[in-house]
Length: 194
Image 1 (cartoon, one colour):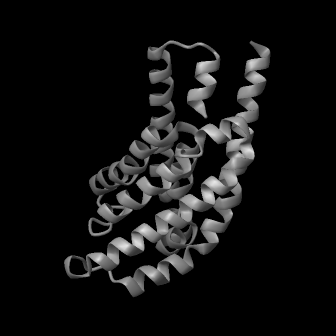
Image 2 (cartoon, helix red, strand yellow):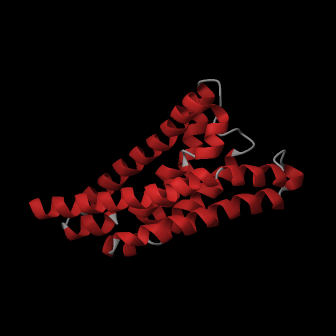
């Protein structure tokens, strides 16, 4: 969606890269900050229920498309892990990190596949987010099941966490598309004022 908006304004390649980089950094920063806020307010169970890192990654996919979204999806948990490890309490935990990187990459790639459609009609953000959520959670569970002998994480535990997180996914299935649609309207309004 961002790529299309920048192309319509005839921005140079350098300006496009700068803009997408800034948006990616902001999205990753949100993906690091939101879990911290939720964990401070609601504790670790709040993170499992509301899945705060997922919202910025879904937005990143919808706004930035597949390639940039993939980078945001992979880097968000990785950056969070390094920052929170330095503070003495790694989030996500080291055992969960590779699975979460894969899951959020799937979230961003699937939602990013809809970026061109969202640029034309913001309502495409709804199926983009819902399909990304399903694919991402399924990939997480599948990876845990496939690597049972290599991880302390067990399928039954992850399945329980997935069920607990349905509340957060439901809220995000509505909130993320609405945010994307509002951002699209702001871009259109900005274009009209230029």
